[in-house]
Amino acid sequence: MKNESEYPKTLLEAGRYFADPDVCVEFVRSMRWPDGAKCPQCGGEKVSYLSTRRIFKCMAKDCHKQFSVKVGTIFEDSAVPLDKWLVAVWLVVNCKNGISSYEIARDLNVTQKSAWFMLHRIRFALREGDWGKLGGSESGPVEIDEVYIGGEPKNRHRRDWRARQNLPTVQTLDGLRPKWKTGRASDKVPVFGMLDRETRKVRTQVIPEVKRSVLMDAILANVEKRSTIYSDGLRDYIPLKAMDFIHDTVNHVTEYVRGEVHTNGIENYWSLLKRGLKGTYIAVEPFHLHRYADEQAFRFNNRATKDNPLDDRDRFMLAVSQISGKRLTYAELTGKTERPEVF
Ligand SMILES: [Zn+2]
Image 1 (cartoon, rainbow, N blue to C red):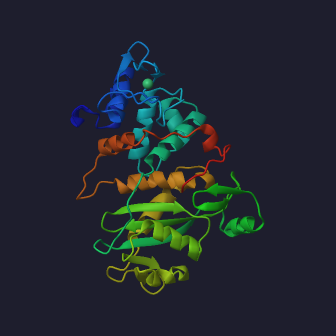
Image 2: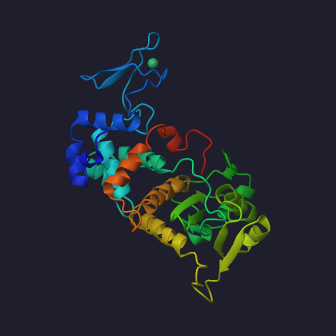
Image 3: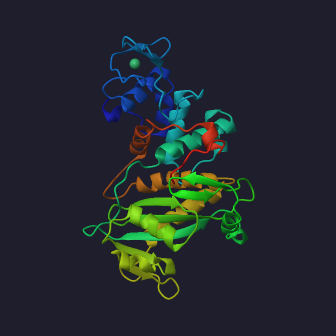
């Protein structure tokens, strides 16, 4: 890979830099395969490059697979050229509150449908991979909180009602959840969030409903035992102490902050998420909510702080480093295939 300082530092520079298709291929190649292209079919490392067609060809005797640099990434099977993809990634990770498919369509001269698809694929790449657990007895406290997003307040209980009526469900790795009605009549969707005060990183999960067993499962899966946890006074959090966590609650009615005991960090994230959803996105379908949350979490977790002065280029490079091995088809995005989905 090149010296990082040779890569663009601003949107304007990125637009100029990626205007050359050969530069785009070389850039994505160097991020995916720093030691040279590998055959996606057989894993062979003897690969030649057909520069006129910008295609790689596996030289292994029984393989001869031809492939582009997009194969196996979020760019695969897309007719949108790499320069537009890369600038779109830049725009998404460096805007403050999010960017709509209409803005992407206008800025990059693609159709709104293409822009929508690109945005979702980029969000998919922004989801952090295998994280360890938050907290720990040696680490700082973990703030937890739950919110309802989207829809009208009067619809809040409709999803539970739908679940009870044996309406269609979707298998997820976390069990069954109701198949959400999409479009205008969207319901409120509960989201559970956790923020590690030590690393200042947030993690969110769209949950089927706010109830004790669901919340406890999420906490056990994401937070080390013996961690200190701060939450609001929701009664569903009462079992935490018995489950080997140190638990303290904030009572928002009578006190806002009691020393260390507060959930201001995670509430800060919720306000960013809500502002982004309100200002930028015309309508959020509950089915896609976890991807919007992932996008906002990426920006929140990689924002510049005193200890960690990240800039636009750093966020862009980090995002592009996550594109490999991630693919999302249009059918999966629109819910036309029922693939188990991890929240
Ligand atoms: Zn091969």
